[in-house]
Image (tube, rainbow, N blue to C red; front, side, top):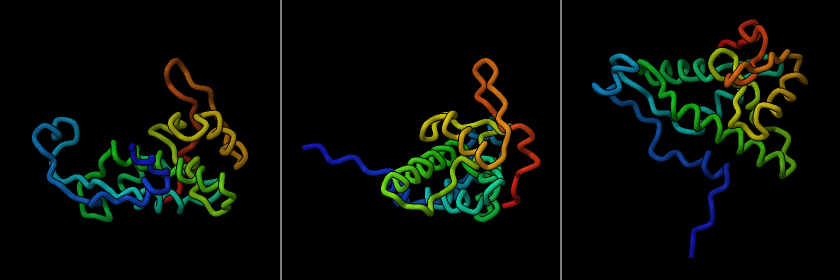
Length: 159
């Protein structure tokens, strides 16, 4: 018999022996240079996302920088940080569906360049609706580029 699928909140709570700081290998150095890289725990990403107040924004790169600083690493791992932000978003929606009010405001976390995240629950349309409600202006996407928050830099919060 197949095991039941984990809920998003169970995935968020599963630290998988993380965080872990590792040396950047030769293969990785072509992309990220030398030094160390922190692979964060999912809950660490969620905790940073929770700190962004209404009307303010952060980016995945800001979260990565905060994680690197916290762990004394050169950089934060881009792939896992993005995946864990998506898990945090889905866990928040799961909690909302159960009537919980105090959830992670994931829609305030943007991709590089202020882009909206199509992997968040409801896609860019739902994220745009949340952001408009908080006073942000959304610029339409161009080509394969997703929509972005206009002048997002002015609303970035220092984490």
